[in-house]
Image 1 (cartoon, rainbow, N blue to C red):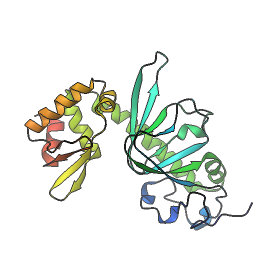
Image 2: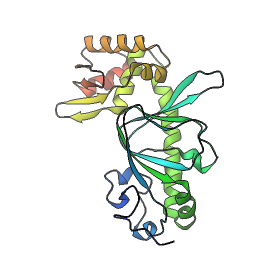
Image 3: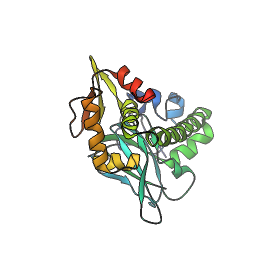
Length: 238
């Protein structure tokens, strides 16, 4: 098979060498020689909000790196109940169970419009045997995913709801001039994340606004006037 040109010939036009999140993505430590060994297409794809990337039980053929937007990983239990086990953020790797089994163990659904790279697991299997750098990065990313999942549960599922929401917003907030902005998702999704009813989420957001912790609440985002004040609230609950 002819080696694929990195810069233009991959089916999805993905240019990993020039990726804006390369320092945090799976291929961060790979050099030009490593890239020259890749013989399968890496698709560079976009999805609209609420699109399904893959479903729990689907055949697992690919791993993914998120470049823009947010994704929920949803696990459905045998009794039909469901729980959001992780929110995937830009630079995160997901779908890693493709390396171990035949099926995905959860569903991946876009919370916002997203931009991602789809990486065939055959690339990881073949390149991982030849590149210690990729092997190290896979181990690192897997560890990060486990740590994120554990901290996710502990931080947004303990304490009163306003404190949990504060921790949630701090994880996602980005500074924008004199204030910060954090994304908001469908209140039903946020309720699943925190194991409360969506009405509870709406009431807690209103309460935090009354306290001056957040402002300009919309369907998709919220402003944080002073991120240090919100962080202090999240730590002390006052």
